[in-house]
Amino acid sequence: IISAGMARELINHVQQLRKAAGLELKDFVEIFFHEEGITSTEEAVSKNVVMLESKFKGSVPLPQRLAPSWSVVLKSDSVDVGGSQVVVAVCRPALAVKDSLDDAVKNVMSTKEPSDFSVGSTFRCTVDGKEYELKEGVDFWLSSAAKAKSTNALSWLS
Image (cartoon, rainbow, N blue to C red; front, side, top):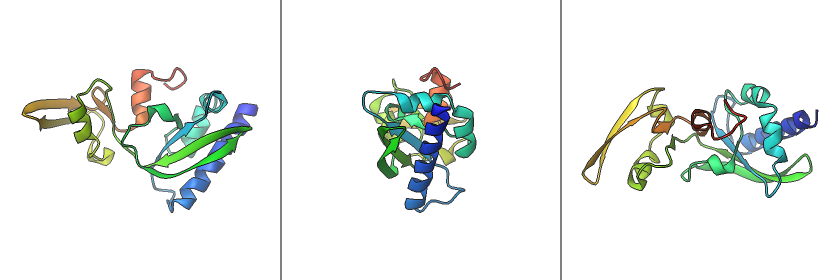
């Protein structure tokens, strides 16, 4: 019951941030959160994934550590969730990439929009004279949530 209440608080804060950012219901975003020390918000999210996915069009709030370094924050705030101070950020959708990719290739991927790709697509590029062929779902993902699910980065997200 407590975790469901915290999840509803998080939903309310995200909706307020979306409104403050001037977003419309149809606008897809990624949501990240960070809390110092304790993990009560992550625990609440983990126990309410289905409800959160239904509220956020298939997306689920993720720990900030899973956000790409190039993620663009549209609006963020430090809010109270279940008595804990949590920084919540609403971000533009961004591609997530395999951690082991060359930094120069990561830089190229950071300039691409998820809407430019489809599930299972292939992206080819040449960086510093070296050719790369990257496969969606293996080398990059259309969202941080898709990467987290694919790589089992979170035991509670499958």
